[in-house]
Image (cartoon, rainbow over all chains, first blue to last red; front, side, top):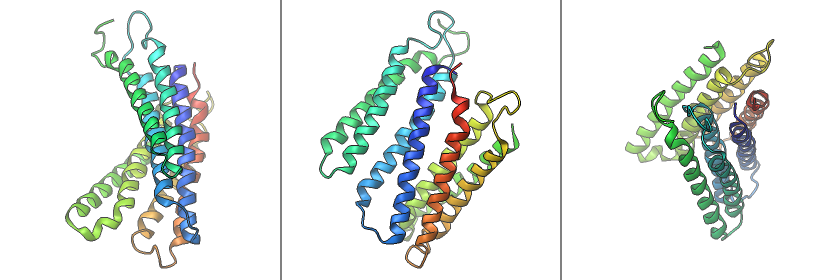
Length: 137
Length: 130
C-alpha cells in the first residue's frame, strides 16, 4: 500500500473514532437531559463522519487501487495527493471548529473551501488514472 | 471471500433495502419524517460503513503470515457491536425516545462507538505502507 493511502486511511480512522465518540456523547447527553447545542454538534458529527471518514477512506483506497501508469511515477506525482490530504484534514478541522462556535460562518466557509480544494487535487491525480488497462502512459 | 466479509456485506444489503424503504415512506407520508435520523444511519452506518468494514477486512494487505486478516474473533466482535448498536437505535429511536428509551439510545451509541474503535485497532496495522 502506498504511503499516501496509508496517511489518508489512518486519518480517516481517527475521524471515524472522533465522529462516533461525538455521536455517542450526543445520544448519552439526550438520555440524561443535559442541555447541549445539538444542531451545531450534529453538524460537526456529520462533517467528521461524512468527509473525514467516508470520503477520506474512499480517496485512500482509490489512490491505491486505480490503474497505475506504465511509465514515470506509477501513481502520478505526489504533489496533488499530498495537497489533497493536507487540505481535506485542515478543512474538516476548520469546519468542525467553526460549527461548534456560534456565528463562525467564515471559519466553516474556509473549511469547506479547503475541502473543495482537496477534492480538486484528488481529481487531478485520479482523472488520468481512470482508463482501460494498458492504455496511456 | 471470508465468511465474516459475507456477513458484513449481506447485512449491509439488508440495511440498504431497509433504508431505501424508509426513504420511500418519508417521501409519501409526512408522519414518517421523524425517521430521518434512522434513515440516514441505516444508509451511512448500516450500508456504507458496514460495506467498507467487510471489504477492508477481506482486501487489505495481510497483517501477518500466521493471521493474515488479524484476529478473527475481533472481527466478529466488530460485526456484533455495529449491528447490535444500529438495530437498537432503529428500534428505539422512532418509537420510544421519551418513554424510558433514552438509556437504550445511549447504549446504542456506546455499542457503535465500540465497533468504530475496534475496527480502527483491527485495520490500523493492515494500512502500513510497504
